[in-house]
Image 1 (spheres, one colour):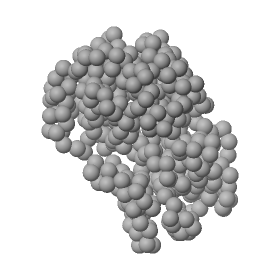
Image 2 (tube, rainbow, N blue to C red; image 1 turned 135 degrees about the horizontal axis):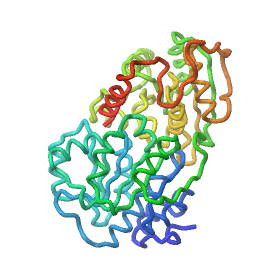
Image 3 (tube, rainbow, N blue to C red; image 1 turned 135 degrees about the vertical axis):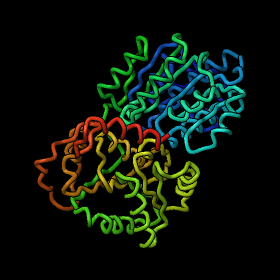
Image 4 (cartoon, rainbow, N blue to C red; image 1 turned 90 degrees about the vertical axis):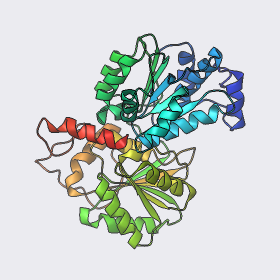
Length: 410
């Protein structure tokens, strides 16, 4: 199977070949023909399988075939993603395989100058990649129009739902023409995703190349049962064994990420941190330094669980287990990329047994134990369901928290 066999323009095929990309991945081979035919597509594939090209190449093909250019303030194709890092990754990928064409690829995210974004949108955009929150800000300013947008893509739609972006989507979608092509891509398929597809997709083709919840095949997983107060020392010991390798460390809270970064700095590690309270410039600089090897360790919240594509990451540490089981799969998918092997280590404190049980149930198997013994599951803390934290809250609070997370990520 080749990209030319899939029906893509020879111009795009040549651009891909020049970048050493000659054979489509399974999700690309299945999705691209349907997308080229104009069908709505619902794609399910784990992270790192080439989903961006699966929706980006068909849109580029059809826009190039049309030959026209966008009018001022208009957008011909819109891609929504939940985090700034993922938006940048998508935009960079699409720019790479449309290099040398007339297509204008733009991106808008929070944490960057809205005036500069307004000026760029004034000239019209072929393909716009955006976080929902910042896009709504620009729509409120009448800086952009969606009334002629022909294509809509929801990438990592399950994470958008979990972060509360459904409210933003309900505002954005009615501004697009009813006669459009919509594609939805995700690594998991919770029930809310099925409901979302029924609302926004018309008779979609479903393509699925790996079971939801399946971690990357080349990731070696390990689990340590350790007291919360002892986690930092254990992490130092693990990092010390491979100081020259890139390691990504996940925490649950933003203040926890900063606190852990400072502790590792005191131990002599070259380390940075990214989370929702960092400005876009701070996040970009930290990721660039990590990618270049200036930083050997990067502490992050789940803003990085799906938005980082750095093939050199050899180790992922779950310093805190995630509240949402699927996020564990996405976190460990940051390693073993581009054909490389990777290692993922999880630390489980006594109060995290519910999270561990939910993660292992989602994956369908246990994580091999390399240290400690299982704690007794807290009787007062039943196993989590996706999107729920361990502590209950008044009914009026969850929506407010989700909106806050969405605003910070955007």
